[in-house]
Length: 366
Image (cartoon, rainbow, N blue to C red; front, side):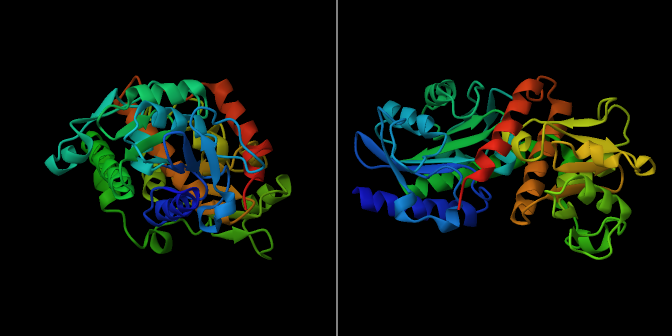
């Protein structure tokens, strides 16, 4: 494959990643092997819809940290290590897909029960040993874990799917998501029933109208919204989540011992820590008052018990991303009730992730 063809293929892969629902915004990354020594990979922090050939980065498999003016994906070491380990692999997709990301921290592997899926992914999906995103340790752990299965789960992070063809890599990613969804639903039957029967008109008929969709410029807005806008000039939009895991959390929030005594939903996923914050506070409706806004300090969401998950963003394009990332993290939180070894991310590391995102990654892109 020529370098030009590889760049065009990477752009095609990135757009397909979005259109198939395997990622949102700039999350995840894809690459194509050019030859034994080189590969093409997506840039860091750029929207897939806007990619041009000049944005795609060409890297040497043995020296992936040597690059020009366009910064490649932070997971370039991961891609390079996989290409070095397996010469037959020509396409790599790294995703932050919903169910696979949530399930990745539960067990050492996820069983594959469907015979058709076994042809693509064998009998089990292995989970790599955890290491921070972008690190050499993570690259080594995933490459070592990748056998003939074609996919590896990355705890607290996401998944990697590979293929000899583009079609095979994407089919594995989509099949992996179905496997992890089925696994989660089998382990959490009450959540599964709620999720599968979630009404299409939830936003119109089930959300509390005390918490409307709002933008800073609205003339009339709830008092609590005004306090948030006054306290955080960077917040321009406030909207309650209308997605199923958030709604299920609201339903379960008052069940004894469902959340800790500090009323915090911790970070189980790295991208949640980056975008939503180190955790989310849960406060009661009756306790809403002059101090409510403080619970959003270094956070972008607030849970009002039995009422709404308020998502607060500067750029409205981030609203869907924030809602979806909360969905993943809440699903992981539900799983942690069943799998006691599934612990949240370490608090100091979460703070580092949040700081790094605000000061660096969020300012990149197109």
